[in-house]
Length: 308
Ligand SMILES: NC(=O)c1ccc[n+]([C@@H]2O[C@H](COP(=O)([O-])OP(=O)(O)OC[C@H]3O[C@@H](n4cnc5c(N)ncnc54)[C@H](O)[C@@H]3O)[C@@H](O)[C@H]2O)c1
Image 1 (spheres, rainbow, N blue to C red):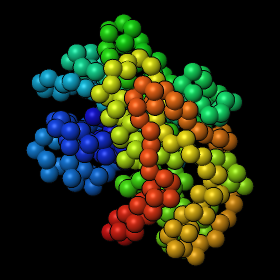
Image 2 (image 1 turned 180 degrees about the vertical axis):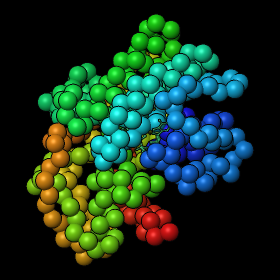
Image 3 (image 1 turned 45 degrees about the horizontal axis):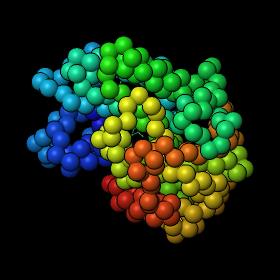
Image 4 (image 1 turned 135 degrees about the horizontal axis):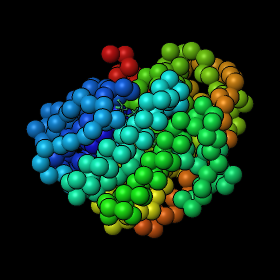
């Protein structure tokens, strides 16, 4: 697992260990944290290697799966590390695919809804090719992931590496990093501190938010399925206006914060909602945690974890 010390990667490490797998995690801790691995590290079947996967990647012994999750994922992270984001999407993916090929292992790519850019089709099915500005500031992430998908498909076609592509939509939950810039942790941090909640634009843009347990369940279903070589959207199609999200968090946190409006970032998508019919029909998977429940759990976690 690359990126296993990050938000999603660490939850997935825990799940794979719980399923009886042995896990080696490679992470440079660029945006992740060893604190996310406290549970995993107490398991003798887990190993952590501090490593930048843009370098040649090797593992002793047999490997059944290579899961490539390493990449800055929040807009503020990939705007801070634009070249690294391109490198981990290109070189990191190449190295991870090379390992899968050498070990005759399967490969899973953590791709993203950002491959659809600012979409002209709504909700977004996997057949939609997207609307990405390659030279805009967000292009570093969107194009890195598009390139990673192309590279993965080339390894499938050329070297028969069984490739699974998860197009992950916005996910939230415990272990989100305080200050990572994404809407949910930002609003929770501001709400818990009774500070103004900063909503971009007028807040009518929409997001679809998936609770992390649901997402991990979807990844697991994709991993054990026989679906190969076709991307699968994983996310929650329940769409929420960003302003309503802010108000819900204020309410659930029992906060006195007021909402204030700030400039929209360049190329910020107007709408974002997965068409998950492929995941439902091929994997039998559906998210089940309602937004208010998931937010309440995340707020309770943040109250303790972020105070430490
Ligand atoms: N969280 C989401 O909503 C979401 C949505 C779509 C896609 N994704 C994808 O899922 C993956 C994980 O996202 P996340 O939210 O957990 O982000 P995260 O920033 O918490 O985790 C990414 C991890 O990758 C590590 N990393 C970055 N560059 C590395 C390198 N060169 N070598 C080794 N490790 C490196 C970081 O240190 C971090 O631990 C990413 O590939 C992201 O693009 C996440």
